[in-house]
Image (cartoon, rainbow, N blue to C red; front, side, top):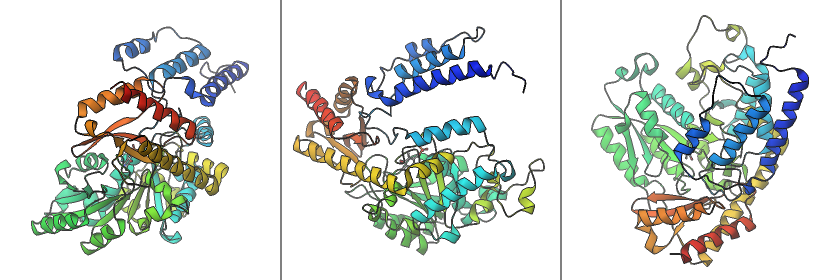
Length: 473
Ligand SMILES: *Cc1c(COP(=O)(O)O)cnc(C)c1O
């Protein structure tokens, strides 16, 4: 094959591969040599990025420049001192998968272009559907860019089910304005999705939460009845299993009964917390998830795969096709002759990368048992953190079993500026990263076990850094 300059000569390419692997291995083997979070100076970063596109550099120089930029100017989620926003240290199996995907570049729009890729994804989706408790013969689903697209998809499924001719006529197909219900602790992607569907963000009803930050089911019931009485069309209710801020788990079974009573779509947003289903010890926390019509689950959160790999899984095998089926004359036609589904008729996306390989490969290499062990150990590390914080005189605000802890001090909770200053002092140490989360009027510090390598040594370092910041006042 002729070598375009784009390919490099094979011998040069080998040298570049080797250089790249050495760079990546150095970062992967010990990110704790770096500051967890960079100082945030936009001018400095923009200056670093302002290169001359008229003057090419060698691939190795480009690699050095880009990795040095990343070393200095990102939050290192792979650092064991990162107690962050569900962003994991990427497990090695997922990294291998992303490299393979980049080289083979399978196109997942049409089945006939990538039979292996499409069927591997279908297989892993069905296995996860079963793990969540769906029955084998009714599972369908697709990989999404991430959880926000999965939640958006769920809303489209609900509208397709509830609004006559939604796909063709949109909201003009009904005189009753559709509304959806989420808890006050739910993810804001539903507001975005409501905007995108044309329902508008005001059609999202925010249901208050109880003292465990879980959805108040009585309030939900009242709100639905009132909306129905007012001529609106309740189309969907969302149970969040593991809220982003405090790890609350909505009462999924009670919410499901209400959804059935009013003929609504019930979506379970288990983007992070769904991983509990893999552990026989913690599975009970998400019991009832199998009742939901659809589930959002992100493999790039608790399953520690590189960003991003969201999934929408449903127990209604024809609803994705009803929602997204479109015929395009230029697309391959095998979909008509073979017993297969073209992914572009099943999802918001068209051209799509082999997102699911990360999960397929991780399952091959780690197996359910490997994941179960890791997930259990992260639960235990979360418990250890809670215990040590309590012993250190910190107040704990959430009461979830999931490994996310909201904590603080009486004189910080009502003072957003003071707690933000406190948090910045902690993260400025460069050794740990935590965040501030405000629920209602209460400001809390939030630490989540997102890195499977975070263990007692790192927890002790976090506690020491917190004590030091506290002593400095
Ligand atoms: C992270 C998260 C989302 C959004 O998912 P992305 O992968 O960030 O798009 C939605 N819901 C919950 C509960 C989440 O934790």
